Image (cartoon, rainbow, N blue to C red):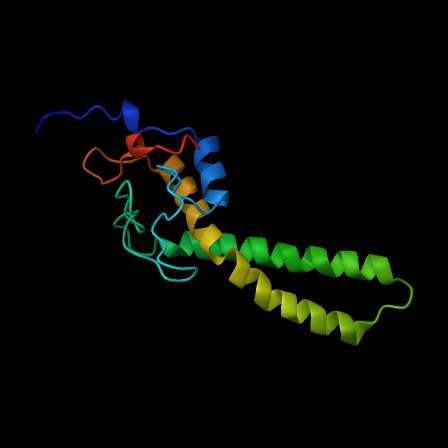
Length: 143
């Protein structure tokens, strides 16, 4: 087997994270990444071919963990702000209804972002193997 030069397959972590927060493929920057819709996912990036799970069982546990941390933090911050703004007469029932709704909306809004952010972190921790699909030189966005 001929050794493959992987130096052209390294993308700076800050760039990967910026792309991921914008719901783009962290490797090549394609806006569609591996999403077929807001919730529907394909198997790989439509431009560079990076596989969504990178061939690892349980890969989505990382995005689940990020989703849990982000969404619980958002709800706790919303509770703190709401209570601070309404002291001393805190409308408990109204806040309960609003924050319960937010606890449903936040995960729906952040779901795809947690997958792309996790992929950026995973690529940082486990760089691409020479035989793994994914071509950051397919970057035509300059993101």
